[in-house]
Structure formats: structure tokens, C-alpha cells
Image (cartoon, rainbow, N blue to C red; front, side, top):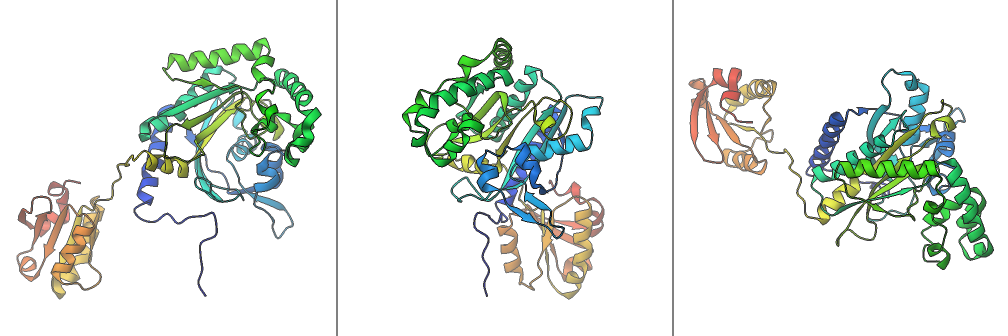
Length: 424
């Protein structure tokens, strides 16, 4: 019987995994500079957490979650996104009581959604996200957006566009909700069943519908910007000022609606412009979610965050033909010739690795010519050759592959100070 990988998943093989490592290293360094601390949460949670945190009118909760019963008959769900888990941890571990506020967190890890696999959409995918919890200052919104934009800039992508909108505070959203209901209700029977069920619960989600996006009522729907009260308008203006002060260009799109129920005030997406990336141009999305912490059982706590897919980053890099600088060159390949030199090989290899030098050797009893070919394939900077003659002289022949230059080096030097010879 043969086995195949589950649909919507992927194996990340050597040659590709180095690119993932490079992206992850950038994430860790960027978040260090912004003073965001890493958090790691379980890959499954109680189902109710996502129903309450993500929103029971969303496609994620209604159609896409991997939900199962454990042996204790408890309903558990593989996490479809990261924010709800982070907020749950924030509440459970009483991080709202920490002296340093806001609490600034970031995460990377696999998420799971049961949807039709296509380019840029996997059933298991990896997200990088940040959450800033505890501050209602619009400048923290600016900081979160700047972090996201800096990530794409430093990874080397061009033509990246920031699109922002305001969904308003609770009062603004209530007024807008009533206007949307009045707008869509007379012809709601022309919309899909999902939109019909959302009309009373969350009509804003109708604007995010992919099936009915070309319906004429979509283009004439009331804009949230026309229903912002003075406080929401002022907040949005301060976010824009923060972006402008940092020299970050943006576009305001009053039709931008995030797909999760918990967003309010600032909402944003980062898009890739230009050909070669396919129909789905969104790279990242996020926004402010005042009220989510209370929904999950914590005290009143404002928050803002974003998430992005690493798979889509790699797609964008490929579309723009950006080559990530990865470290996959071997420092040393040790060629051994004869039984006694081969017996000495484990000791030498172990010593080199202890000195911080990456190295490998032959384990297939190949002849010297084949071993040299293996060293070339692995792009070894140096080849150390240990034969009977070298062992008798307690030396190793060191060949620099770039120049072809060969030098006989005492074995004692190799074992104690190989770094003086090998430029890693």
C-alpha cells in the first residue's frame, strides 16, 4: 500500500526549508527590534473559544474548522487563526496585570482551515502574527502597521501597498449596521444564503462576500466612513498621522472589511501590486479588536494585531524573482582514504563541529573521486583529505575549493583551532 500526503498540505524539503529558516530568522530579529515577545500556544483549543472569539457568522467558524471530540467527549478544534488563542492565554495567565503595558506578543506556527486548496490557500498553513494588548493609543496602531510593512520591505518585496479603513467604535458600527440592513433588506433574496443569514446578525460581512461581490447593491452600499462619530473620526486621523510621520504610504478604502467579527476602528490589508501573483493579491491583514478580551472572559482591554501567511510570502518572492540569501554552504567535507584514516574520521568530525564548523564526510565507502564530487555537490568551502601518508605525518591536507590551493596542516591544529584555517 502506498501513502500520499493529505490534500491541502505540503512537505517542505531541503532546499526549501532554508528559505523558511531565513524568513523565520527575520521575523525573530524584527520583533526583537520592536520589543515584541514570542508566545507559543497549543495547536488545538476548545471549540467554543473560536466560536466566540472569531465569530459564529464567519466562514471560518461556519465552514472551515477542523473540529473533533476527544475521548472525554469534549469538542476541540485545530486552531484556524492565532489571535483567539493568544487572547485566551493573555486572559488565563493574567497578563493584563503585568506592570509593562501594552503586552506586545508575536507568534509563528501552523493553522488549519478546511477549504478548497488553491494557489496561496492551504488546509495547513503557517502564520506569523503580532498582537498588542492593553493600549487604546492610535500610535500603537501605527507601530503594528509599520512592523508589518517593515517585514515585507526587509524580505525584499517591491510594490507592496497598505490599504486602511476605519470600522468605527461600537456606536458608529451600530448606526452603520442599521443603514446596511435598510440598504440590503428589500433585495436580500437576490443574495446567497450566507448573506441572507448574515443580514440581521452582521450585515457588514455581506460586503466581504465573494459570491455576490458584483451585485449592484454592493457598489452603492452605505460607507462606514459616513457613519463615524467624532471620536472614531479623530482616532482614524491620528492613525493616519502616525503613518505619515514614519513615511509610510497608504490608501484609504471605505469598502475594506476584515473577515472576522471582532474588528473595530482600524482595519487594514497589505497587498501586492503587479502581474504574476494571481488573483489573490492580499499578503496580510489585521486590525483593532477592542472587546475581544472581554468576549473571552477577561477585563476590558483594547488590542490590535495582524497575521500573514508564510506560504504567500514565498509565492510573492517567487513572483518577483527575489532570491533569499540562505546559508546552505558546507564549511568542510572530510575525505578519508584507507581503514586507519576512516577510523580517525569520527574524532575529527566531532571536534570540528564542537568548534562551530559545519562539516560532513562519506558514509558510503566511496572512492576519492566520488568523495570529491560529493564535496562539490554540497558546496563545501574546504576539503580536508586524510590518507595513510597524512595520518603518518599527523597532518591533514586542506584544499580551498574556490582557489584549488592545498596546504598540509598539523592534525593538532585541526583538532584545536580549525577556525584559524577555515573561514566560516
